[in-house]
Amino acid sequence: MTPGTVVHHKYEFSVLFAVPLALAKRRDIVPSDDWHTAPPKPATGCVRTCRLDEYSDYGFLTDPLSSERGPGSPTYGFLLADALIDPQAVVQTFEELPSDWNFGGLIAIDMASGFGVNTNCELGETMQWHRILELLNERSQVKATFTLTDTGVSLEKREGDVLMQQLAWEVPHEWGPQGQFHYPHHRFLGEDAFLTRLKNTLAEFDSLCRQIDVKDSWAAKRLRGVV
Figure 1: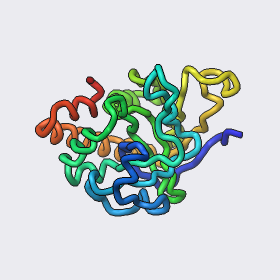
Figure 2: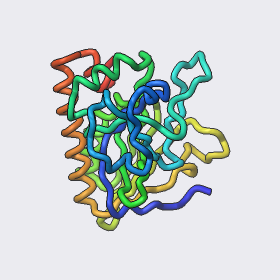
Figure 3: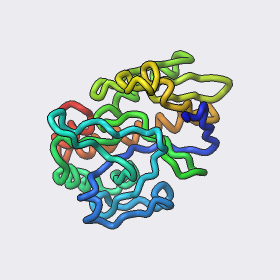
């Protein structure tokens, strides 16, 4: 049964770069209990066993002609803090990934439970959060559809907090209309804190993209969703 609302008292934002299990096995793996608190390490040196909540969905096809799906449970990857230590490590990691592999995006991490909630499933959609944040600063409610995966997100400022819900427009009938009955609401306490942390995370992601652009414009375009 889908929970109605999950309340997050203490939380942080980051960007998750998911990697295939085969790549994860060749690196030091940060255990799931420590994945969100372990100190940053270069992305070429480690991956994290990311504990995503059960409603986070990376399960779309990597190739429309095959039955292979994206990361399941657990999800392996590294975080924005890892990438910022050594942007060249991100470039090297992209060189090892399949050309159609670009799973990841903005996540909210509940620091008490250790679970992460993903918002977009394609790294290149992360930049689209700039427009969502801009709209959220102007109005009390925003609904947006990410252009690369046709999934969406709903945000509402209510009673000093922010409510967020993932949306999926094409889902099995039993999930309910437009997937809205499948995904819970996530209530992030403190509207100002939510907006500030989101803004800072997006600024760090922008900085990473600029640094990578100097080293490898193709990798930077992949992060920006323009390839």
